[in-house]
Amino acid sequence: CVLTLRRSGSSGERQRAAMDLGRTGDDVAGEAAYVLAEALQADLDARVRSCAATALGELGAFDCVEAVAALTMALLEDSEVSVRICAAETLKKLGVVASTETCGTLREILLKGRTAEL
Image (cartoon, rainbow, N blue to C red; front, side):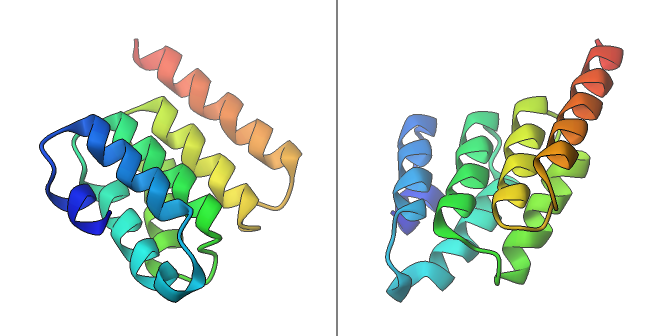
């Protein structure tokens, strides 16, 4: 999965690899979190970045500094609202965003910001 996520020319394959990494066991969770954070920051396809953000939540990567930093940067700076929403939801799932109300407020802000850009 790691090599597929890093090297495949197919965004569909990279999306599947990201979701598969989110379901990995504890023995490879550290590497998986790092690779997913890398994909969240660098993949050109928003669908892959969204999958990477969601997979970080499935993995429970709250103790991976790179993952939390990548999620925070995606929340604040990603050009696609879908990626920012996935990042917000994952940060909530990981306990970084304190409440469902906060997550909802973030979602509203992100959607309003996207509408204003159009």
